[in-house]
Image (cartoon, rainbow, N blue to C red; front, side):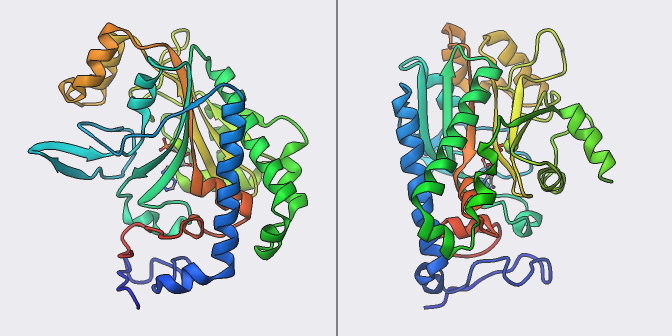
Length: 341
Ligand code: AMP
Ligand code: MG
């Protein structure tokens, strides 16, 4: 019953950093079962919280003619759709914006496929197949959607901490440490402040780039709670993140960092909805707008202004359950580069 396992680079992966090569050992492990029960509770709590606030849950598309190009460094997967080149979804962003034509507040639990670079195998945070709790709200500002993300994460943490004592104990997760983030509002720092803080911590961070995964973990460990990083520079994110009209070159975007070194949980932004600006932004990234046919047609006739975010479900489970690795939060984990069921 063993499955061949391909290690990406000999010596690049520490023992224990990768799932057991025998899927049976992973599935019957008490740790896996506790982690998956906690994940189920996270999903139930997130659905209850969002539907209670007027959100409609939609089922996300899995394939489409085009997908999110903003998956830095990760390769997209092509499929042949009756002779048309289609993609597996790297994120639901384009469909989230479009769905607001039907409902003002939507969410979906969306599977994503990203063939991440092999060096991410040892980050403990990257999977080639993962899920997002994806949320989008028509007419929301960046600050309003950050509050939605904060309330959702806080609700989930409190719910799991009060209902999943047995599973948290099985995993050795200290509930006192977990619930510390509920004592006050999450912190808020700009990207410039985060870059300066990283400099103090001895890590060179370009003011023009996305914060890389080592820096994320460093910041997350140095912080004293969950916190947002806002105002990412243009060029570090997808074309759909809205540029601040009063501060060109800066996006109305944010990440949410977990405490304790768990790193990025969520990315979000106000979205660009103006047709001409979207076309310009796509061109600026070096892509051909013609690829985005259906999306641009909708945008030309009018897409609602919106803001939204995506929380990585396996990453949220890892943080809440205190897991060493995101793959422990998946029954059939796909660690980048490893052959597995
Ligand atoms: P992004 O738009 O790339 O920031 O992705 C949104 C969220 O999905 C991130 O904040 C992570 O929580 C999660 N995520 C992104 N890429 C991965 C990955 N390769 N494996 C697991 N989770 C991921
Ligand atoms: Mg991100």
